[in-house]
Length: 555
Image 1 (cartoon, rainbow, N blue to C red):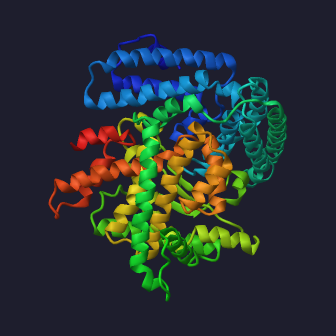
Image 2: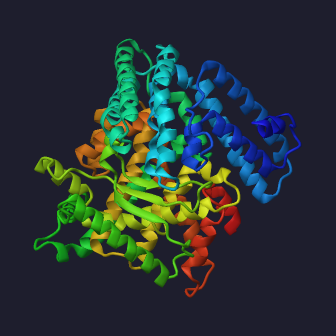
Image 3: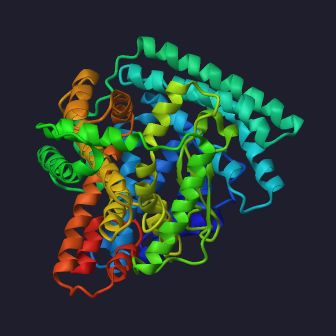
């Protein structure tokens, strides 16, 4: 604390790297749950500081850092300029969410998110003694009722609160309450944990009820409308006009559908004993349905498939010199633990830049073996064999696991803590295509990749159209199912994500598209014998920063 105060009393005297580190120190004190996610554990007994006075003080801190960063941006070396850009973008995002959008007063999801991340990493990670982690988690659990009450006192701007956001927050909070009532006591079996978990569950259910009641009188619109352009720029670091991004996405979707259909027609005789339909959409629907029929039957089979595919992918990457793989391998693959309950999600949970050598958790979505057969069929159709093998490069190598591992070892942690989403998701999507083009997988994997690319482009169109053209759920569903070839369930999920996670949905395709341009440019300047590793290592070297940095670096 003394160091932070000293640094803040010396404006204009810090180099860019020290300024970035000082901001991280301040940020982690303001948001202790984000500190835990980054591998900083000294604030693990506290929850985020969200009292009105604390937020007001935080905004003053944000302004001081922004003034100091602006002074240094006039003359800075390459690495310092990158850090200052990352810093100022985060500072702008803080102001946008806390001042322009008034999220503490006008967005129930602001509180659902803060409550939802309270103990997740403490319970999942095993890089510290279990008793230590559980004791610190228990301190946070004991504070959850007070944070839930603070949320109820803060959510007063009914003119701006969207009924849909209130309903979604209530849904998440009830799931979270279920976790603290049932799942938490499986993670911490002590009697005190059971009692504090029950108190937290009661408080979360009360907040969920409050949100439901709030939704009945709320009059806000979840659509960002005029604020979308600013949110898009802050979330993507892309300065292109939103209308132009939308126009290009429509064009990209038509071209990608044509490319995918041409591939499907080329392999059609190997799949079917009848002529291909005349319409490209019908060709792709039949081809996609074919690969979805080849799927695991149980969660155990799903896990074994991913473990085997992961081992094969690392071996493939070494053999083909795809990248300099960070050693030692620190990857744990399993299903999301049942005790997570409502928090059970799949994905890569990296340890962060302050605990870089801890295990990365690759947790798989799963469904219980005794679930209804129709539900299991739908689940395993989505996680079919071709998709699972195709997605391993995206999630692991040279995708998220490898990229995040390299980034965590970077000497400049601000780039990992506030990693650029367009770069990160774009890199995962590019990793899919790169490995396929090098020989990873076959027709099922290639078709699964095309299906996902169509989905990613549809996400861009949906996100922008919902918020700037006022699309309703029916318009989105019709477009997603007809033009993006998504099934109705995926389209329904897309609607919910478009309402509440903008502009994250746009990052997959926008990043993939721009990295492909860099890749093709790099290929045109190299001979055929140049190892792919040179490009991949270069594209990981600066961390998860905006792609404009890599354009400058590669040129």
